[in-house]
Length: 394
Picture 1 (tube, rainbow, N blue to C red):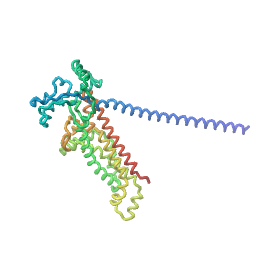
Picture 2 (picture 1 turned 30 degrees about the vertical axis):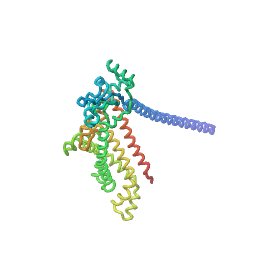
Picture 3 (picture 1 turned 90 degrees about the vertical axis):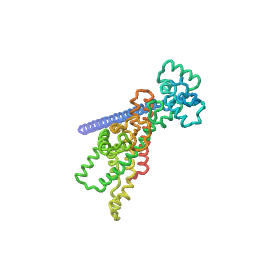
Picture 4 (picture 1 turned 45 degrees about the vertical axis):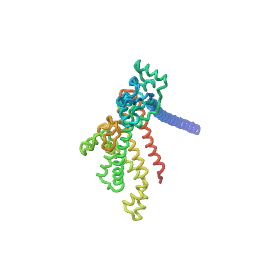
């Protein structure tokens, strides 16, 4: 009887254990399903974002052109070289430069020729089905359409022209050059100071309360909202040092302050990843601390340092808030000639276009976002490549 009871108790315990095991497996499957659903939701949002952005930006990469006859037979009336009846069709940016064009090319005097020129943004929007026109202008457009005097061409003005109040002539060139200036200055400011600071803190600094306080503050600075760095740049760079407002140097130094904690933290992490046996071996051979760092630790940690720096620069390139406070979100039509000239950057240009009421500017803002995303993805891909190419495992 006792053996029967023991067998029954053993079978009951086994059933209970199997039931608990099944419950754990069911819980695992539920958790895995929730994780997959979260991943799918994130992927769906990403696809939705990219597809909507591409759909909004795609029309901006083409531009309507109209074939007109330019008549320079009367040089004194060069501004009327295009038939005035087409003033409602042709961009004002084309007609207003006709006198200057004749002045720069005197051999055109007395000549008459046909040429494809930019149409107004309203005409472009109407032909793309996203705008409307007055009845008279619409009739004229349809007549020209029947005559084959319209065509869609690649919008190279988007990359070869600066900002403009005319949507059809607005471009990213000034913002791209300004971004290059700002990123170069950010790198020149943050990289040497950040790397040298990290080397001192990691390799030479004594472990005391002052050093610990510095480390804590650096870590906290990396989490400070970026707009506060704009206030810092306004107070220090512009008001104290007198750096020109709206200039690339003001933006570069401000973003350099923001990037500095990221460079320090990533550099310290890369230095820590080098095994202590490397340092001990160098010291055992009679090398000084500086020689150990210069010849062994720093070369081995360089991929990690470069990866962190590139990621910091990519973050800086996408920032707009600090630049609002130092005046870089403004109408800047001309390409800056130096780092002290008034400049803007791509995020600021996107912000400016997105706040304009015309649909054509919204399309250009979406196109500029795609260009910015492409650059950021390229920077991050470079960081991943450097890490995988030069990564060493011990």
